[in-house]
Image 1 (cartoon, rainbow, N blue to C red):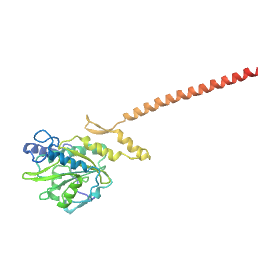
Image 2: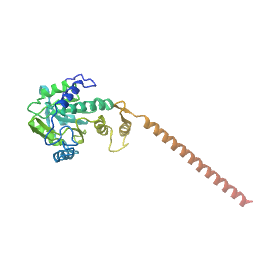
Image 3: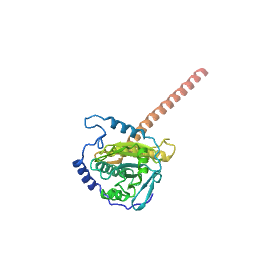
Image 4: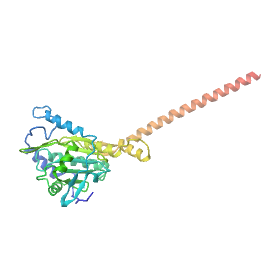
Length: 299
């Protein structure tokens, strides 16, 4: 994977919040299906179109994503295969969106910060792709990521040719439609595992860090054959011991599980010791009784 310039990023994502606020002030109701909230349409119920696009999105889970080519600033080229071996988080936006894309990217930024804090800065990659190829050039997307203070070597803001972006969106189950005001689209973030297979879909412009962190944790620390090796054991321990603390707003390692394990082991040890002693006592008494019986027969 080619390197890009690292942009200084603060924890508050100030520019992202400013743009998100503008989006709230300037948003207009979308036609066709909800862009900012997949739960209801303007009548308070799921529209048939919304049900359709969610169904298409869910159908992508378990699908292998094609090796599409995306473009970065300065002519840098990236393939999906460049990110193999680690989880990859992908979201598609159009940069001129003022309704749901800004808060979606800001929520993603918060989720990425929390996940990196608990699992490591290098543990997964993120790419944000501009699907409006008329305006979302690679250079423009790079500027967009820099403006939000989110772009770094593990989070790329990319553009690409329409056929490549359309193929990628199809594989991800992401649908978008042009309208007179821009595009209608599902607010969607896709988590892909290290083998390039769609693992999880996250919906909505605002979501909690755990919605991103938990699937990443499962991919990074999970193992299909528990305890097959020391490495598997370590991963399994990290999977269950890395928990999200809502008060701290971050993932932390929970040592409480070791207290419970030690308490359980101590209990089992005490029970085992008691049973061994009882068996030993019973055997000794039986042996003494047998010896006494033999003595009586001799007499």
